[in-house]
Length: 179
Length: 444
Image 1: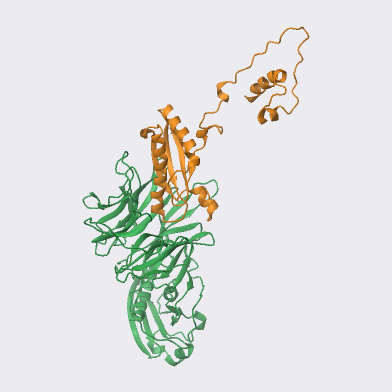
Image 2: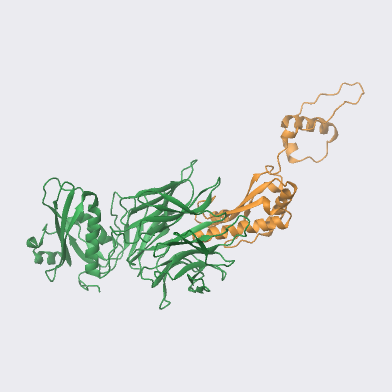
């Protein structure tokens, strides 16, 4: 799939874009010496049309690492459930996605680190999930598109007993159950 | 009252680590014993036949029980100076010389095709008097329980307090293996770790086991509902495995706790209807008329309700003041009263059987430890020294608290006496163990 795109990139800019800045990706891919047919010396302009990449090669925004909504984990400080500023843009993007895709459904999971008691942590995890939900609905998502659930400290992603593990476990996870 | 006999030659028991019950799934290691624990000699019981003697060594079970309480120091078998089986064979001066304060002897005979009669006698070595003696019938399958019964009698005779050796514990284990679903198991075992049986096994989370007052049922939380796992409260009859779902409301259903008369369950529900705003509050469910009554209504997280022994009030955790603290509310539902003020947070209360103390998880900003609050004097004491101690549970005689802790990066159980002097560690054979619940006295 990428090859077609690659050819389009190489055939055109090889003639037109010498000296232009190119993205590292294009540079890297251009490393092997491109074999370019020299135009026959007829004086006529070569008839070159860029080939549109087929739709299948485009990633869905939820799966595209370049897209804001690719990020689906929000981290929290110890004992806190307020949303940190660094996650606002991501949440706004999710809100926009939900607003533009009325059939999309999401579950927000709340999680805690292992400190504190299990049942209390289920409550705290739910506060985190609810805080995320609140931002999303304020920014345009419908409450009907979102359900929340808490797993407290029961589903850690890191099993260590130090802050580096705890920090990764204090999170809200956005799970799209329908796109 | 405790019979005081301080032997001046007594060895101070600071750190005594030995492993009992090699065949048990839970290995109980005493890490600290009471200084001045009574030296007691428990002599292997004689066998009078007819027929083969039973496999179970009753005297070993009694020795282990008494040693595990931390208040006795049983003789090793090789240090027994003689093997009497009743008072006619006892030569007290020899026992005095060997350093025993107390002596237990006994014998067994067959009675009927599958039965025995077990006789034992307890002596005060210095006074050369008998303190207790009983003859107890037993079936083959009941021998362990008769041994525990004898330990109870000895313990009560010598300390003035009822023993809790014929009790059980429930606990949850978790085994994680790479590329496999996690395996949660809810177990019930004898208090000495023997006879463990799986009550429930699941690939989803199991939490908060709670015994019914008659010891026949366990209530617990299981995340088995739905595709990704949602929590519901169940009760299950331990002997038969029959289970009943009690609460499956759209939000969280958790922290079940049986009322002292067994007729109700206090529990936590966060959302009665799917579109409700979530709010963790205490409810009381009547098992007879199946009616649910709301007890607290506050935006704070209210959880871990437990009943006072008179059934008139419920003690629970709430963070309505900012951080988790312990509160008390009458079952009629008046305004809750805050009970804890020590440290930064207090959570997960449990009430001592006499209703006079509350054990809890306590933090002062650092680690989490088990603390105990005496209600009348308001005196608070920290009992443990782990970094992540949690889920305390009282023995039904109020003498010990079993709890979950982390040791060498493993989640294990531990126990501490309510005065903090005796300490035990109880690792599970595989994986981690947590959420212990000590059964009530079991009436057979």
